Structure formats: C-alpha cells, structure tokens
Length: 385
Image (cartoon, rainbow, N blue to C red):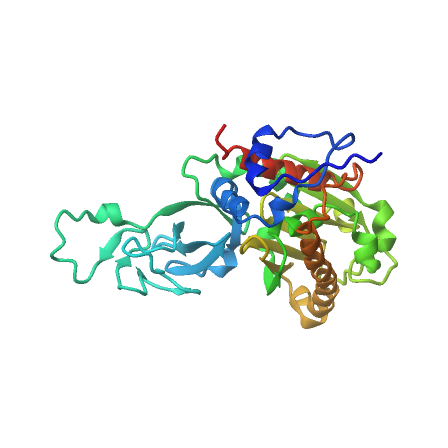
C-alpha cells in the first residue's frame, strides 16, 4: 500500500513550519507543500524573513555613472533606490518618501537631490531631508527623524547587494568561498553587453529550483542532453555549483572561443567547461570562458516572477562584436524559453488538489534540497512558537 503524505491545509501551514525538521536527501527528502508556491501569507513571510534579512542581488555597477547617478529597483516588491553620493560612495535607501510614501526617484539617471514626485520633499544623496515646501507651520518637526530609510549596500566585484536588516552580518559571511572560487574570471573587468527581462507566471522558488538541478536538462533542453552524464555538482552553505565539461569539437558556442573572445588567465578546467551557480536567495550565473549570464530573480507575488539576464563578455573588441554576441544570446535565450514554457505548467499543477510532495533525487537535486531547506529554515524562524 502506498503511503501518501497529505498536504497541510492553509490553516495548518504555520504548524507545519513549527514542526519541520531537516530530512536526509538520500533517505527521505521531499519537495515542498503546495502552499509554498501559492500562499499570499507565505509570500509575505518570505518578504520579511528572506528578502528582509538576507543579502540579495539588485544590480550591476555599470548601471551607475559616478557621483549623483542612481537607479531604482523593486525586488520582492520592496522599492529601493541605489545611488552614488557626491563622494562616489554607494548608498541604498527605500524609495519611499517619509512624508506620504511617494517615490523619490524613478527609473535611473543623474541628480543632485532625490525629490519626491508627490509633494516635492527633497533629500540629499546621503538621505537627509533638505527641502519641505509649505511645512513652515509644522511645530516640533525634527528633520533628522524624516530622513530616508537606509539599507545596507555592499558589492562583490561588479555586483551590488543589499540587506534590509541593519543588524545583518557582512556580505562576505553569506558569500563564503565563492569569491575565491571565481577570482580567475576577474568579472569586474568584463563588459555588460546586453540585458533582457523575462516574465513568467511562476512562483520565484520554482524558477530557482529549476536552476539548482540538472535532472530536467535532457528532457527540457535536448541540445544539452549529450552533456548530461558528465555533469558534476555540489551544494554547500548558500550556493549550488554545477560544472559541465563541453565537447571541444562540437562546433557550438559552448566550445568555440576565437582569439580575443575569451578571458585570459583561466585554468584548464575553466577553459573546457561551463559553470552554473545559484546563490541564495535570488542571484545566479552561467559562466564560460567567453561569456557570463547574470541572473536577478525578482519575486512579484506568489505566482509571478521577473528574471533579468545581464550578459557579460570580456572587455575586448572581438568579444563585444555583434558577430560574437548574437550566436551566444540566441543559444542561451532558446534554453531560457524552454524553461519558461514548462514552468507555468508546473505552477498550475502544484496548486492542484492532486499534487503531493515527491522524493528528490540524491544525485541530481542536491541543490534543490539545499535551497528548500534554506527557505524553510528562514520562514520557520519567523513563526512564533
């Protein structure tokens, strides 16, 4: 007789979180209950416990152009503005005016002050309130108490991360050994050549889970099937790392690196393979000797996700040429669209009354297992005993 692990009802999901215990990947690990992909309550808890407490990726340094430059971004529906102040220091704030919650900036650009589009309160680039029209009669008004709310900002190479928790550890603690592992690529020297936003009617975790395993590749991505048996992977701390050795005579963009299109100084393994990395919660990249695709995974509700892909290539004329870029973009865009065709179908089915959690593959889904355990640990920490 088959034993079916029943789904917790909405009212029981907090009890499920309180009672949760880690499961062995080889002996008993299961996928998450349906509510994790559809519940507005759990999504709100994710905003607080994950995107409110962990370092997450918001953009690339090339989006800024010196003192006074800024860009805005909403990740997990938290409106932020990232700015370089007059000294060139990187700063981040909630893009929320402290008067009545209007935006102090839109899109990106250059400015001397951040000025609310609602009632024109203005703030210097350090976040201090400077201009407040028609407030002369307001008694006991303390400007310092109405400064913009700051968020912590740090970088790894050219990548900008924020943390909304003022008591959080430095980014280096969460990054662990990843910067050292990637140092030969010298990504801070690469050129951001192309950017595109993809939208999918899929919970953000389903997208990340798909990116933390190779199990689906021969089925969903036929062009990758020949590499499937050679894939190696590991999942540690806050990251999943997958390595795919490529066929040197395949003639594909995965293995053809004309002179001037690849990063010098890589070791033999890096020159003969492609690495896929997923870093908790919303940052990932594919990196080869001739290109890197940087993922910004942005939850936009329980069943909607934006994924920005930024394309980096070595800062050399041959690498930046259309002749080199266009085949690379087409190759990986085709793979992305294969995923985005299937994932909404999975979203529908995890919301069905016929869905129940299934066993994970110890060999192929260790990254999914790690990601799900990090999710549940973070959420369980926000549930009262």
